[in-house]
Image (cartoon, rainbow, N blue to C red; front, side, top):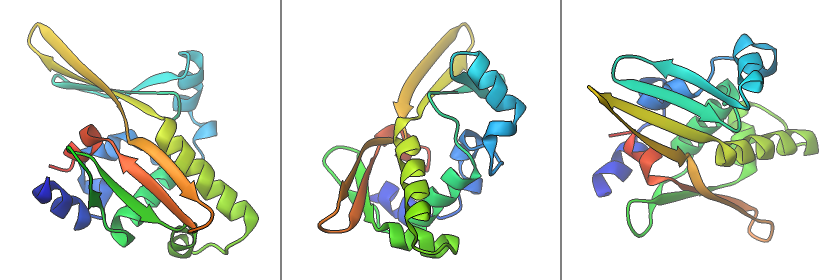
Amino acid sequence: MEALLSVVNHSNNSVNQMRNVMFLPYENIYRTNIYKEFCKNDRKVVLFENSQYKLEITDHLLSQKHRDILDIIFATAKLKPMTGERAYVDFTINSILSELGLHDSGENRQTVERYLEELKRVNIKLTIKDGLFKDYIIFNLCDKAAHSEKLNKYVLIFNDTYLAMFQ
């Protein structure tokens, strides 16, 4: 777990990670053909498939903004270990808004909070093809998301399967 935390804490460019295929390279995904297919297929779409892997997203598509926010979180907040293989990070919305070059307005805060909720809701199904066998795992990026108004902090507890993608 320590080696994994070290990798994640020193990694801030999701483009170089396997996870990059989960995020569509668009600011506005709602006008894309992928979004239309996603809606037509009961909110499920295959984003990547080759002879070894198949990656499906359900419940919500992730855009460039989702990736930007995750990159900011990984670059500015330290990932902290929990029991097992999970880890969490705490941060403020102000830190994200500042890195995005946005003013601390109610609308901007609500937008970032919406992106954080979408990061929590998305389901990823990764199928590993091995000859005749097709094993798969379904997971979320975050197991839990929480906010403390008193402390003015947000907490994301990352799924161990998602963190393993950094190895």
